[in-house]
Amino acid sequence: MKTLLKPVLAGVLLAALSATAPAAEQAPGLYYNVEGGPNFAQQIDISAPGYPKSVGFDTGYRFGATLGYHLDRQWSMQFDTGYLYNSAEGKETGSISHIPLLFSGRWNRPLLCSLEGYLGAGIGSALNSIEIGTGSTSEADQAVRLAWQLSAGLSYPLADNMSIGFSYQYMGTRGTDYRLGGIDVDTGVSHNHSFGLSFHLDF
Image (tube, rainbow, N blue to C red; front, side):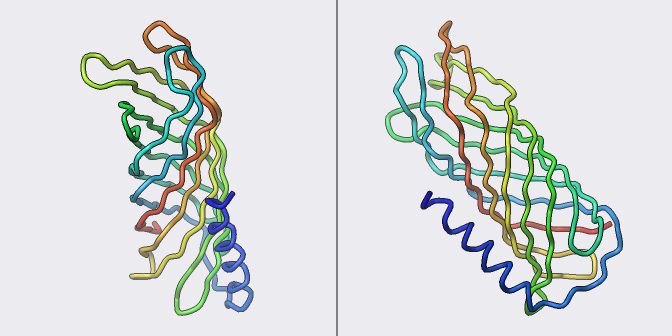
């Protein structure tokens, strides 16, 4: 809960600031967004004989790409994908990764000093992959599971149709069943927290 407190407070602050911001017109149209930065994967539970009960992860990375459509000045819809990767921490060897395929809605709002903020939520699926061990002795498997996302960000215009910004993404996926070395391995829900720099372009 403490991990999610800051994004929630940021969202409340964003809403409060936006109450005083003037609205501007936005013609409907396509936009594209790319971003990248560190990804923090929370510890996951593992249920399988011969495996640890839980695994933590070192700081990894996330790359994201979005294709969206402005419905009006405040609302837009988009398709999100990307790649998230984290290696196991401590004495454990291996990694976990995700390729999200999500449909999201986004609420945009102009703020102060030419800044614009947004809040978003989405749902879809993710291709979850896990690897235990390294090299020729490693075992790996992957599976598609339900995924969901919450996001928030700030941007600053470089021109009429482009901007740069800072974003936060939370992505969760359902627990996944893998087959590793002839053993069924069940993992718990995966939680990822990503922070990134973004580039936005309106067509």
